[in-house]
Length: 151
Image 1 (cartoon, helix red, strand yellow):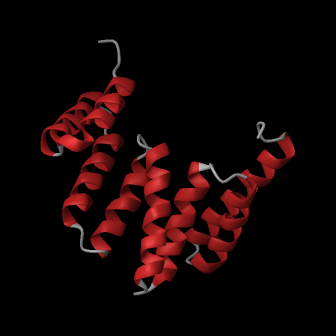
Image 2 (tube, rainbow, N blue to C red):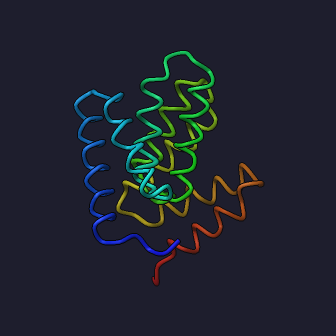
């Protein structure tokens, strides 16, 4: 598939903005519909995926299947938005609600570090995560390399 046309890109941006506004207004079911439409136009749009996952989470109730679906969408978004504090905040809240405290703390620390002005704080968090969870080490090292600045 080729790059999105300008008109299609604008339509996706408008739908994402509408979905985010609806989320902010406490209307997650309506937000979900707008964001689903955005994802139909561009399935790889990370912000649409993030807000869609959050809307799905807010409407899932206690349904384990819907919670899993919401979590999968949030995780997919975080893979593309690894340096976005808001994405990590949503993941932390999701994991708190599902009782996965270790994962919650990981995403809270990442969000905190990403909202800090100090790049060294991000690197410190990444190093702690590399030390704590060896299976994540390759991805976290790539992220640390990406964030590295000339000092």
